[in-house]
Image (cartoon, rainbow, N blue to C red; front, side, top):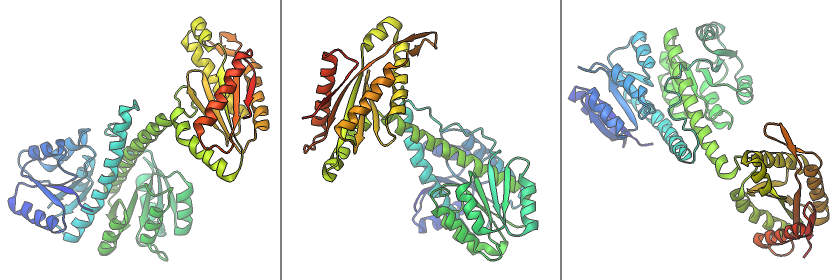
Length: 456
């Protein structure tokens, strides 16, 4: 995993040292000698990660980090503070302004590279989500990129996996005021709970008595339900090699015993904010996908979805020598509804027709709104005689009760005309559609509110 790393330090020798270590591992390195220069580089999108010295004249590292995290353009860039300060209070201060981690001078090379690789992987994932979310915003989906910059990071569900009662009780006590915290001593049971529960963060002790904590971390990363959830390791100072291994496995963060309460709280809040940020981006992507295939008014699939799937359904039906029926229905005199009662009333009718369709048609069938007042239902494994009975039920359920419009103040009758066709040897979905459309035209021509089938 390579990345472009910005090294920020006012001492040239420190810059050269970090640059040499990173370049040897094939990272691209950008350098800055001051806070303002670093902010400018980040704002122009010229780096993937920042190694930031704390003790700089003019604008120190804490202020640089605070500004980076307060700006929506740069808030997603991981920041690692490199400092001679090694007190918990200093780390907490850095975490509070948004730093992702601390490296203490003199910098340990193994820890440096493990943390840079870990945060670089995270940045790649977030960049992909950001790119898709920005595409979604161009389609009209509300942009969620900026929504978590003011998030306090509290209120999530935490599962602590620790078989030392004293240790787990201290962790629980430190977090229970601001988070919903649960404790599980059995690693196997924890795995089941993790897969079934709606947790936001796992805290795993590497000192589990009869189980390898790193294996548990790996198992959480391999499960679909827990793959994207943050993991925080609790380790002893002699676990340095295992910590590095854990970061390579995808663990998000770690704390050394004895655990400082304030630092624990700050790191948990950082992981909560980051998870919510990623979740918001994923929701944007999902919303954009739905916009591409779902009709916003009725909630049914749209014409694009039908066009993408009908060919495959027809091919499958012909190959298996199984019948497939296609139903086209059109709301009778829909233009008159719009002209008489307004387009809002027309929208009410469309939504209610969709609702009644869902009540009658099987879940296995594909229901789409083509646009305007026209709907299509594709019914796999359905011969024409059965499809005709389904169509009659659709026609009846639409006609049988009035449609409420104008917020229920008025009710009007609505009917539909329906055309049907069944697949034969022809694999062309357009031909199937034309036959059903021809049957629909016959229903309209013969007086509407009826079902016609093309048996050719």
